[in-house]
Image (cartoon, rainbow, N blue to C red):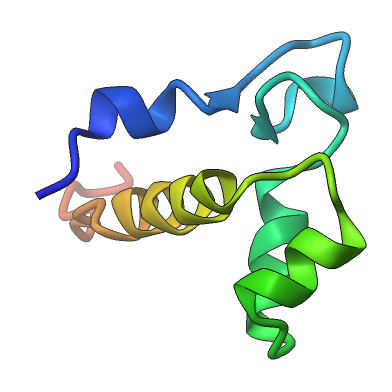
Length: 82
C-alpha cells in the first residue's frame, strides 16, 4: 500500500502558481494536465519524454490524488427547503 502522505507531498497548492490549482512539485504542471494526458492514451514514457522535468512518481502521485478525490463520499441533501 502506498503512503499517501509521501505521495501527496508531490502535489502542491500555491495561489501564485496556476491560480492555486493542484500542481506537481510547485511547477506549472497541473495534476489535471497529467490526468488528461493519461486519459488521452499517453503512457508514462511518452509523458516523461514530452515533459522531461517530470518523474514517473509525479504521474503516479497524480493518479493516486485523483483516486483519493474520487473516493469522496457524496450524500444527497435530505433537508427541506423551508
